Image (tube, rainbow, N blue to C red; front, side, top):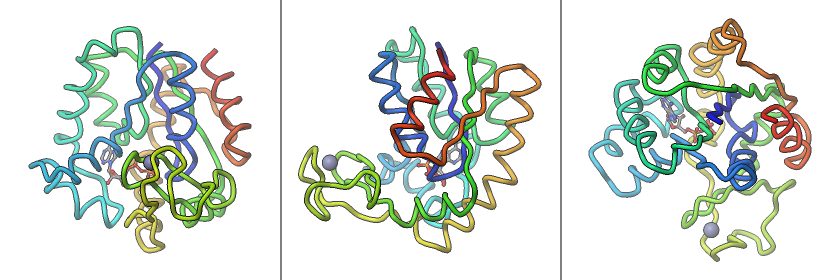
Length: 208
Ligand code: ADP
Ligand code: ZN
């Protein structure tokens, strides 16, 4: 099954996607993670993307689309995949529709207050990328990753100014995708304001 997760920043798409990927045994493909990897490795793409990402703006469509098309061609995608953070614009959705079919789009929703609270308490492992939340997904030792003992840090774009920009960009550019997919009969809405466990159960139901 080819699944797309849509929802505002910080709603827990990534956390739900990691679990879903294990459960369904299909890859979790997160454009944000792929871009951060490019930034860390100082690739040409990473160098172009960094300043845009830091301030919460989108990376230009052509760069992201090229990156994802290449990823979807790999062997591990042939039984399905979970897209997280892509598409984020109508243009991206139309481009990707030319190469793969989408079976289900899960729209995870929550109020701005919930989102801002989640992002301000989010910490990420600099080594393995695992995402913590200082209330709901606490590390055992403060500031240290349970999985790999890497250091936890706050993403530049989780700082208040960038969060404001990301919410604005989400409303302008990404929200229109909900109607786009609704018209195609692919959308299932899910409440993202509960705990990570509750959210995962709802996402799982939405794709079953
Ligand atoms: P979020 O927590 O907002 O869902 P992501 O990790 O998905 O964050 O994305 C982080 C940043 O990476 C975005 O703010 C944007 O700059 C860039 N990015 C990720 N996916 C895309 C995309 N599909 N199109 C354009 N930019 C993207
Ligand atoms: Zn780690």
